[in-house]
Image 1 (spheres, rainbow over the protein chains, first blue to last red):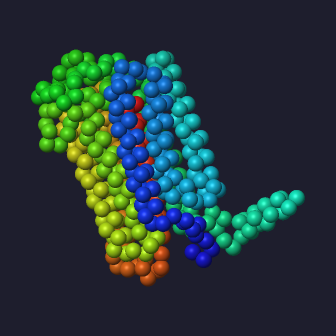
Image 2: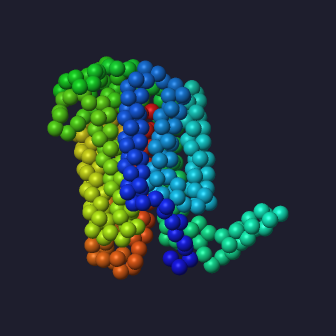
Image 3: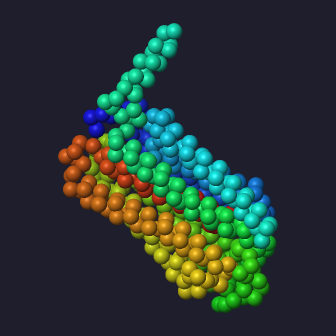
Length: 107
Length: 251
């Protein structure tokens, strides 16, 4: 602990609490959107529909990581260590989903 | 020229040694890196799921059963007869995940899993509130919010256990299920099981830290950073659930 300095919060505890609850409502709203979109887009089967759902998940992930896990207030370098490799993993997921489609065509 | 000198001085200050260049302590940094590695593990599972799933054709059907309608006693057999459940294609999630506790026989697609998602999000909120209380060294508040988080985790585990029981009663297992290809139930159990295991270990960790909070360990230490670290793990568990929910139920 001696080797660290705390990034000081400039907001009051009340402000921080407001931010936390605001993020909760945003996450809940996004989840409701998820469910509504699922039923609205039931008849479509396309890569775009899947991309949309993954995108919604990524948006939720950003809120959880940035606010709940405090990343927004940490050094950019820390954000880089975590976020950049994970962006690459998301690209991998996308590519393998496409690959799955091709394998299906081959079956 | 003055700019580069300042930048150089800044860089030397940050990376010159003797302090953490990321401002966070060793323990917190290592927790972050562990979570990154765990994210790779879950990603590989989800990638496998995506790949196997998309080698099967989709069922092609939609809006077969109206939500909130009553399902027949032999719903699964009826679906099999209608070829909506067949080993040749992946089943529609809303035909499989349509039960809700105490509401037997009602077709409630995705309702229960949505409830589980909200429970986990809410427990994440109480965890953040515990961390925030820790910043103010408010011991009683930290303990209160941690207890709520533990209850949220236990509620989620209970829900998942109930869901598994429904599934297993209907005949799903690692080597066969009545809904579709064998891989369907196998992947479901493996991925939700791996995630549930993380929730369980998170609850156990939270409980240990909760007891320490009550004991005054962190009060004596002067900071509640352990609550933050265990909070990071808990948020990660929530984060993974967001993606499991997306991949298994929505896509």
